[in-house]
Image (cartoon, rainbow, N blue to C red):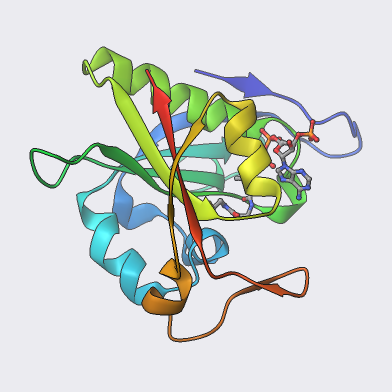
Amino acid sequence: MSTSRLSDSSRPAAWHITSMNPAEAPWPLLLLADPSREKVKRYLPRCVCYAARQTAQFTPSGLGALIGVCALQPPQDEQAQWELMNMAVSPAWQRNGIGSALLHHAIRELRKRGVQQLEVGTGSFGDQLLFYQRLGFRVSRIDHDFYLRNYTTPLWERGVQLKDMIRLTLAL
Ligand SMILES: CC(C)(COP(=O)(O)OP(=O)(O)OC[C@H]1O[C@@H](n2cnc3c(N)ncnc32)[C@H](O)[C@@H]1OP(=O)(O)O)[C@@H](O)C(=O)NCCC(=O)NCCS
């Protein structure tokens, strides 16, 4: 289990990583990473999920409030790979190492299953590209016009419309 503490000592801030039932994943977090509720509804039930939880905050389950999610889809056919479908950390908690810890945890779990490769698709520019490459992912291909073909509403990041998806692969 990974744990950490934010540097701001004014708030109770310990967190830890656990497995999570996909049905438990909170929509505000899932939609941060993927604005299409319809798409999320399709892939989420078949995903293996992990969560970052704020241990200091009381919840009825005793596990702590969810502040990060990571959803991994097993291969859908013989040619396919495991794919990271959704990954998000609550804005107030971002850039504290939680996303990296979640993904490292997921990678360790996939290795235990004997998985050799993990794929992810993300926008062709932006912070996420840096995030994945810092963790060792390498660019494998470009899916031109992916966001134009698959989303009914245009997606924008810092005033630039997202059009192409970069596919990245991590050898495990
Ligand atoms: C991408 C995301 C999951 C990363 O989680 P995180 O807990 O913030 O990540 P970490 O703290 O482990 O790593 C942060 C690193 O990622 C990159 N990064 C992530 N978010 C960033 C941001 N908003 N601005 C600049 N760099 C960012 C940087 O390299 C950063 O390292 P640094 O803090 O040393 O500069 C999180 O920012 C998020 O939820 N974003 C919104 C949802 C999303 O886009 N998900 C990915 C879909 S493909």
